[in-house]
Length: 387
Image 1 (spheres, rainbow, N blue to C red):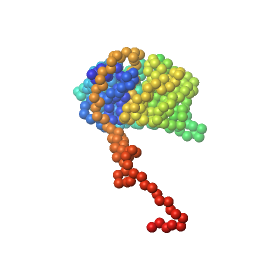
Image 2: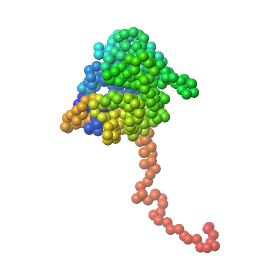
Image 3: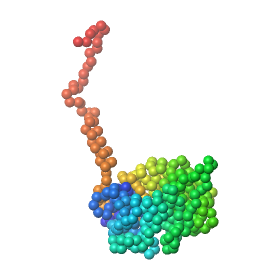
Image 4: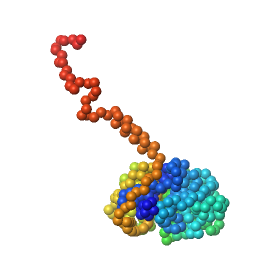
C-alpha cells in the first residue's frame, strides 16, 4: 500500500524532524516516511537529491552524517551508510553516473564514496578541501563529475572530480565599493546554466551574480541586487534565462539573467525560504521553508498560488517530480497508510492550551453553580446610607 502511495507523489520534502514527506497535489494528500523507530531532530534531513536511477531513488543527507536511500517505487527505505569526515551538516549531495556518492559538509570536506548504501569500504575514493564555511555544493547536470562550491568568505570554485585536485575555476571578489572598502563574500546557493559553462550565485548580501569560466574574467560578468535581506535559495526557470530567488523574509522574485532586471514577484510565504525548485517543463515553482508550508506557484501569467499544504514540521529541502503526466494516477486512491509518529511538541503544546481554555470556559446556556437565576438590585433612595 505504501508503494502505491509513494509512486504518485509530486513533491518530496525533508524536515527538521528527520522525516521524508511525500505530497500528492492532485489528491491533496501528504504521507510521512521514516526509516525506523521514532523521528529525531538529530537526523534532520538537510539535503535531498535524485539517485542514479532517475526518480526511482531519493538520497537523503541527514544531520548525523548518514546518507539514506529511499525507493519511490517500493515506498520504503532501502539502505543507508555513514559518510564521516569534517564537521557540520551536509551542504551538498549528489551521485555520479558510475554510482559513486559525492558529499560536502560545512567545514569544507568534499568526499567521493564508492557506494551510497553499503557499509563496506569506509575510506573515500577522493577527498578535497574546498575551504571552510561552505553553504552550498552543486553538481553540474550536464557533467556529473563537475561540482561547484561556495560559502561565507569562501568564493565560488568549480572542481573536476576526474582531474586535478585544484579547482578548474576560482572566482575573484568584486572590486572595492565606493568607500574603497572590501566587499564581503557570502555565496548561499549556486546553479549551472544549461548549454554553457556559466554559473549563477545568490548571496547573503542580496546579490545575484553570473560567472563565465570560459572568459578570461574571473569576476562576475553580470551582477544585480534584490531586496534588503539575505538570499537563501535559488532555482532556474524552465527556459533557463532567469532565476527565482528567495530570502529570509519569505519574498520570492524572478531575476532576468540577460539584463539583470526584476521580472516579477510571488507572494504568500511567511518565513525564511529553504528550498526552491522549478518544474523542468511546466511553469510551476515549489517552495518550502520555516513556516512549515509547501507551496506551488504558477510563475507565468497568470501568476499565482496553485497549491498550499501545511506539513507541521519546519522544512529544509524539497524535490519536485519532473514528470509531465501529473494527472495519470489511479482513479481510486488507496487508503492512506498509518502515519508514523512525529515530533509534535508544538502541536501538543497547543492541544494542552486548548484543553485548559475549554475547562475554564462555561457554556452560556447553563447558569453558574451557587448563583441565583436572576437578582434584582434595589435602587438607593436619595440620602439613604448602605448598611
